[in-house]
Length: 87
Image 1 (tube, rainbow, N blue to C red):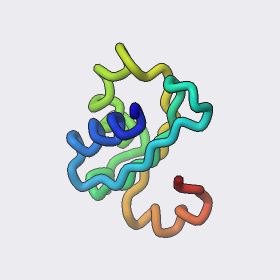
Image 2: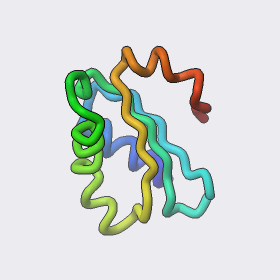
Image 3: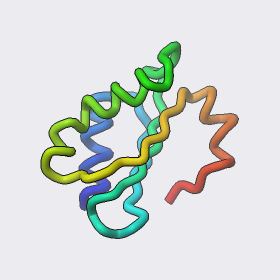
Image 4: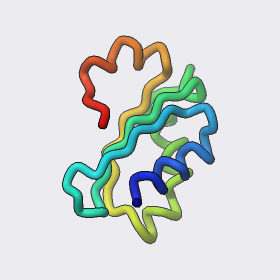
């Protein structure tokens, strides 16, 4: 399943990450990901996204068409998680 492969790719690059990946359209091309990691502490949002997207660069050339990405530090996730539905 592509969602598990995407998750594994992110965790390989960010070992401490809690990663949730969903394919909301069930089309195997458009995905959503929530990534929570201490790695993001002190980084601006754009830098957080760059860390994740760098890990997925190769996947975008072959498997992934689009990814809606949300990144959080553990502290920020504690205050924001009630706004999100995790499958």
